[in-house]
Every structure is written in C-alpha cells, then in structure tokens.
Length: 304
Image (cartoon, rainbow, N blue to C red; front, side):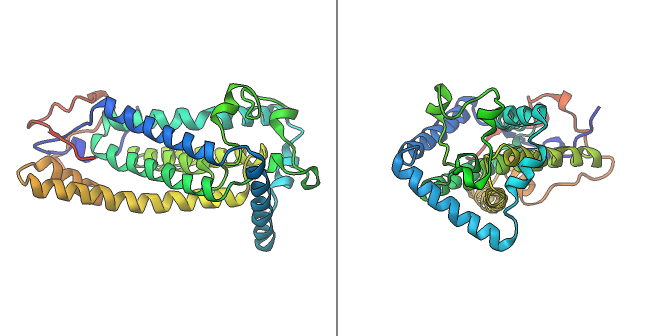
C-alpha cells in the first residue's frame, strides 16, 4: 500500500477544518468555464485572430531561434514514423489533462481538506492568468503554420479521438489559446500535488513522469512550442506564490475574527509550512480513514 505523507489532517488538531460544500466548488468550475468561453469568443478562430496568431507565432519562433531552442519540428520528425506513438500522443493530449486535474481535486477535497484550498487556488489562478495570455497573445500552434515550417498536423495525418478543427469539439476549443501552455501548467500542478501527498521517493519520481510525458506529447503533435512550455511552468510558479499569499491571508483574517477556532489556525500553519508530528503522537495517515474527519472537536467552516 502506498504510504502517504503526513498532513495536519492527521495530527492532533482539536477542530479540523470542514470542507466546502461540493456545490460551491461546482459553481467555481462553472464560473471559470464561462470566463474561458467569453475569452474564446472574443479572440477565437476569426480571420483577424488568425492573422495576429501567425504574427505572434513568427515573433516567438524568432526568439526561440535566438535562444537556439527552435527544434520542435526536428523532435516531431524523429518520431513521426511511429504511428502508434503519434496516435497515442494525440489521444493523450485531448483527454488526460482534464481527467488528472479533476481527479486530484477530488482526492484533495475528500481526503486532504486543509491542503485542498491552497492547491485549488493555485489551479484557479493558473487558469485565470492564462486567459490573459490567450486574449492578448493569440498564438498559432506549429501544426497550423504554413508548410514552409515543416510541421505535420498529426490529428489530420494520423488521427485520434478528437478533431479540434471540426465537429462539436471545435465549438469548445480555441486553437490559438496556446501561450502559455495550460497542458504543461496543469500537468506540473498534478505532479506537485502528488509529490506532497506521497512519501516514497519512487512515487515522487513517478509523479514527475506525468508532466514530462505531457511536454513530449504537446511537442510531437505540434500543438505547442518550447516557449509555451516554459511560459506554462513560469505561470504555475507565479500562481503558487500568489495562492500561498492569498490563502494564508484569508486564514489569518478568519482567525482574527474567530480567535477560538483552533482549526483555522492549524490550517494556516499547514499552508505556511508542513507540520511534522512528534514521534509517538502522530496518527498514521491513510486514505482508508475516509473523508469524514471524525477526530476530536466540532469542525468549522473553511474560508475561501
């Protein structure tokens, strides 16, 4: 059985923090989807956006050439003959990032409530800030560039589960929303969440394999540039710092308003630095303990 890292959820907290209502989290997700839809409609696949997206792509390629990292076409052609790998990468690109992020949010929500708010806020800030890039810097992905750039649109040539250029999927996708790469940012977010959850070193390394595979997939399918990948990682780092500041500030404010709510104080301490239980006093963490939070003290409602 995979051993999980100790958290304040399993320490001697007199009043564990109560999880938010599930419907509140659903509303948050719906709000972000609505915001994304608005940005997509304003800067979507229109002729004006296509012209600007191509111009921005040429600018990014120019910068990559200066840095010596414009090698995406070479990487793609090195594996293009492996049809099974390309098709798997197409399917991976279109599905896994949603499943992984939502799945980990659920694990955090039910089994790691004091960590949930921080990592939810990191993901929300990452997605929200990415919309700024999508709006002000529409970017044509490599697969849509003119043939002179020698990229192959693997979705058309090899195929996969999704086609972003036609059908119902085209109605919910903005093909020029490429800078920064949310695939990269979300996959790295998933890795960080898992690394904080688990204890064995091999499990931590396995978690890092996910963003590595994601970066490979988005490049060989010609959906992103290396510049998008770098921007996605930087965006996640900035969002993490901002989320820690925001979440800790909200916890401190809640504690000042309710100084006897020990659970809030412990939650804030958990965000600032992980609590290491004293030897002999810690309860063994286990996912089998379930999400109910049945230890001593009445739970209190968490802050946003």
